[in-house]
Amino acid sequence: MTQYWFKPRSYGYGNVPSTWQGWLVTIAFGAFVIAMVAAVRAELLTAFWGVAIVFAVTGGFLWLIKEKTDGPWGWRWGVDR
Image (cartoon, rainbow, N blue to C red; front, side, top):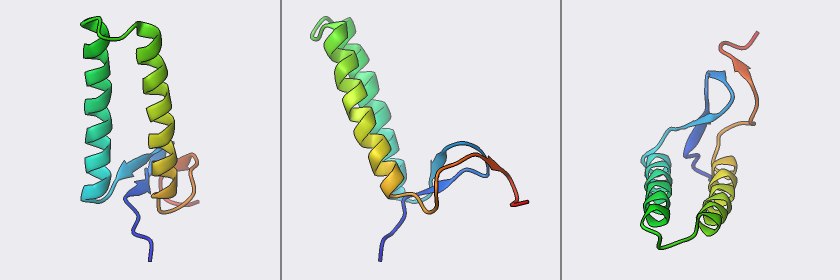
């Protein structure tokens, strides 16, 4: 049985975390992006490599969300019409 970590939003496009695992990976992703910005500002990485790494990790994060979402992605208008 697959446990879903995210659920589609009621309005608009996107997903929201629905379990502690979903919240954990979302917070970890946000912390990662903040750390990458800090690394670029401290000149530990060039801006090019900082952006490239963030884009690569963002792709993986989006893939994980898609795999762990209960239902298809798409625009929602609230209650099904």
